[in-house]
Figure (tube, rainbow, N blue to C red):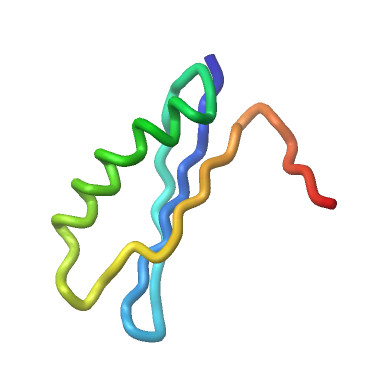
Amino acid sequence: MPYFRVTTFMGQANMGWSETWWIFKSTINQAIAALAPMLDFRNTILSAQHSIIATRVASKDRRRKAN
């Protein structure tokens, strides 16, 4: 089973930050499905001035492809 790197980007006005988590799942679709409850929980502990603006899921074992 591969590890997937999940990077979440947070926004705060015109600044922000990112957090990276590792998920151990068989497929990228399983990793994305596991991400939903994590994002719901993370969103509940953010203040009203902060928001999750984007999330990226990448396989640790595969190189990125670009066209």
